[in-house]
Image (cartoon, rainbow, N blue to C red; front, side, top):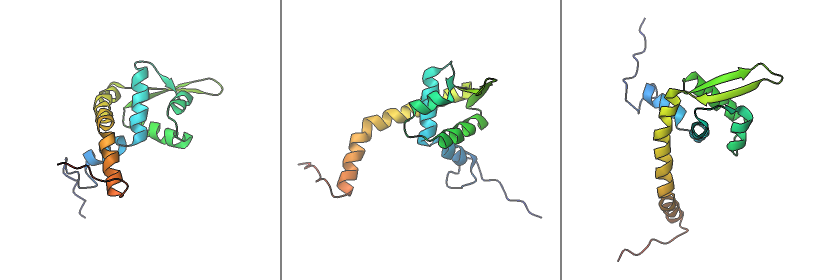
Length: 134
């Protein structure tokens, strides 16, 4: 019986690559927003309902799925208060806090270049004319 050989680390073109799998998980808009909200509260905690209020457009299910993945990866810790209804609190772990810097850099890049990207999209869609470079 032969077993499948694990993907070599760092081969982003291989779906089995652990780095690719991690990037797939942390590269979503909801993960980025969740980490940002929790980083702003650090070292404090944020309740589930407050997270949802601070992230317009996210459904309860998507927030639950996002948080479950972040907790599983060790980026977020979860604390449940034994109240009725239970109070559920989240905070970034040290590992999660270390992710905020790279995500912040990506947001900064996006903010600096969004106008260029939007202009390129309008050009590609035939809604704008190229600027004369003469």
